[in-house]
Length: 176
Image (cartoon, rainbow, N blue to C red):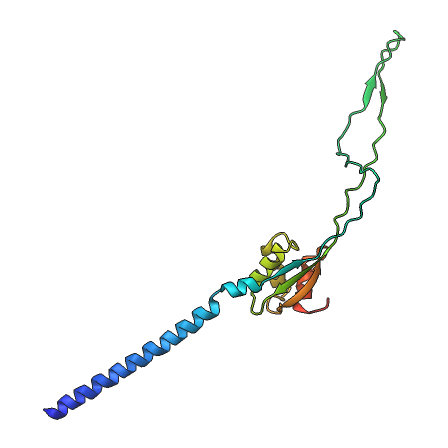
């Protein structure tokens, strides 16, 4: 009878130790995974976007307003001095010269990509810096180029005139 009680006590203690080990291991795994996936305030503060000042040349020349394109119909003039002539004379107006729209000023923007940033986070950083319009376009294009896994962390100086492809290659550290 005492032997049975000892065996039961040993089995219960073995089961409790095994359950305790499983709880401890699962707790450590959950802690590490949530810590890895968490976005802390320190990481958010480490994402810096530095913009270089743009220097503009100011001139005293008058600025011409852009001319809107419009289709003008030719003027029709009817001569009333000659009553025998009932034909209308069409005089086309001379087309106005169009001034090309001013070219956007290209500027260099310094961006810092933190370590371990996924493609969407990099795209959001570039969008906040004013380098791209839509972060989804950047993610799609980097995936199409098979460069999404090659994007690297670091500080980059990127021109606003660069295309999305150029930006992907710059951040990946590859040459075209």
